[in-house]
Length: 195
Image (tube, rainbow, N blue to C red):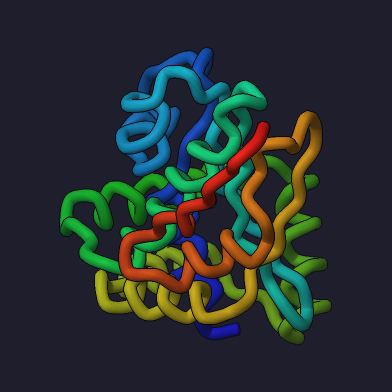
């Protein structure tokens, strides 16, 4: 997938972590999920972005957790972050994410088992191995327009939703899909006559 690298940069921009994560360099404290979610909504326990790549598909996921009474609000906050990702991207934010991704790549490749796993995965999936400097060049070439393009592409596909715990306040799948298709990421309003 030629968009693998832009999606990896997008994932770094989303970042995140837990409300009790230790800060410091390299901990993602300037990512969108830290700045726009965990720093503003102290009742959220966790909001973390991660991605998986497969031979025929890929997933960009947000894992989030909160008190069961605040699940609906949590879902709306996360859908708004997805929508905003398809909007504007600051140059400093983009450069920070690219630098962090290159740094993580190089640090991980200092371990022999990781190198062998990397060689095996790349050869099995693409037939050849891209060397670290080739990957760093691809990361450096990612532009803000690439981030907007892959985020928009992602939002056009149907979301996958998994939830665990007291799901009384979890919005319906249709409402989550509608929020991700909207301009502002807001969930459709629901009205209950009786609780």
